[in-house]
Image (cartoon, rainbow, N blue to C red; front, top):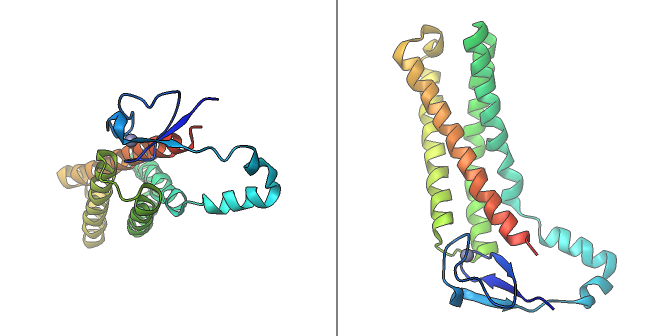
Length: 195
Ligand SMILES: [Zn+2]
């Protein structure tokens, strides 16, 4: 039977007779991999209660909260784009409100991310987690600046010029942050579930 190896640093699971030379997720060396003891047929026997237990046992709060910013920011971009296209002020107002909700959701996403990092990955200081934390902090900073700026100047985008351009650049930077955060998050989730 094929063996399963778990990376002690990031939790990545590898199938094979030997651990990989280096972890594809956190790039640590083979000696950080440990052999996973398969529960085998006993787990299947547990049936329904085992399945429910696994469902709730594997419920990851961050996976729920991460959807808020990753869905809200593209929607904010959509509404601001519609404003630029059609010039209707209601699109701009909707975009601003979505931005406020986004900024409110980021601390929750960051908190659940840190919680899952400690719980599911043992708080290991692998580069992928450091990148995610830095990106989340950047996202929060850009978002706070954009919200306060637009709050103080309701005509910021209507007036146009370089301030509007800079504001839109902040929003695009936020979109870049959530895209990368989702990309790294996906790497961690798929690495963990790969069996
Ligand atoms: Zn790893």
